[in-house]
Image 1: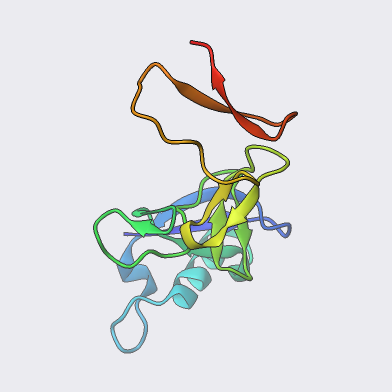
Image 2 (image 1 turned 30 degrees about the horizontal axis):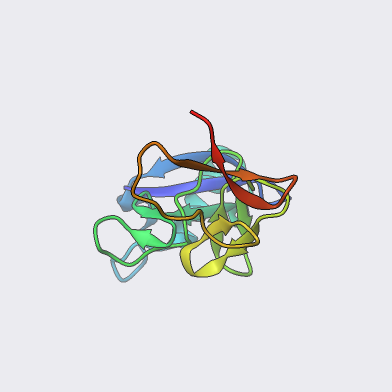
Length: 137
């Protein structure tokens, strides 16, 4: 099975569908994204260029089955398609956060959450102070 995201003209993911690989085979017997897009256009009345293939097994630019990651993240409704970087981005968690391309994820402007071994210590991002703070539990 292949997965395709239906995106708006503004690159927002509206829907994710599965497509049988047999419906996207090219003349050489290999799956083709272009043929999958054409199939989806014909059967869903949505322009072919607004169907983008996505990988169910890719998250934060890592393939969970040790394969090759594909397009950063598995697309979800509300995600944004970044055609320049070829990445599906989840919604930005905070206004100040920036794209961290190597892992296809959002990152705070001062870096990742502090590490600790104490399960009673939980850090939360404070957008007002632009810092990681210990959150009461």
